[in-house]
Image (cartoon, rainbow, N blue to C red; front, top):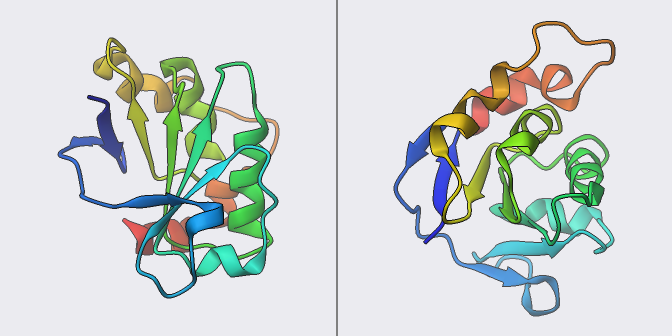
Length: 139
């Protein structure tokens, strides 16, 4: 069973029920599961939580989708990475606005938790820095 890390801490499963985009309806109370090639819209920002499925470690489209949901559409809920989430990706997940991620079985949780402290200086801004107030409200 995947291990859930939320806001930088290992937590128990939160019981959210994620449904695929084609089965999701605004106001249903269900969280939304997006694939990396799903097209973001303003309607999606009404979901209580959104998970983005990473099908392969080397596919960064989920990061771009996260930035669009946060910056263009104003999504303020829990943004979760699921699927092939590797500890090397954690640093980028946080910088792109993810607030939680599920580590598949066999991945080292301690290494993943240290993934946000890899770099001390950056050359480019990130969505997490641009929206610190919003991310604090989600926490």
